[in-house]
Amino acid sequence: MQGKMAIVGNATTITVFKAAGVDAFPVTDERNARETLRRVARDYSVIFLTEDYALLLKDLLKRFDEAAYPVVLPVPSGEATGYGEAFLKSAMERALGVDILFND
Image 1: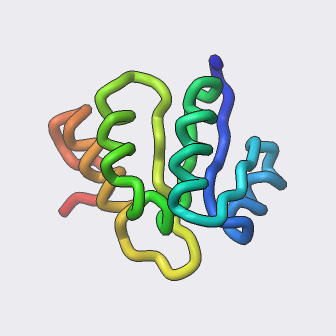
Image 2: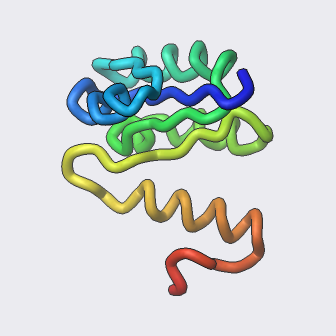
């Protein structure tokens, strides 16, 4: 698992990550995304999840947030909602006690 990265999400968004050498797992609906994320979490330490599916899987992301690994990070997909940025900001504030990236 050490150092392995994956992306789970819609086929359009994950193409860029796949080109960069990240293992890509395309999904087509919420159920498929949930099953794939659980399976991928066994073998990868960093998992990117497209924002469209991250919004649908908030409950599952909370469970991953309680463990050190895997780290699951939402990334923008299509029309960005700001969820990925808000998620990252919240994680940084919890870990460091201060907002070092966004300075809001």
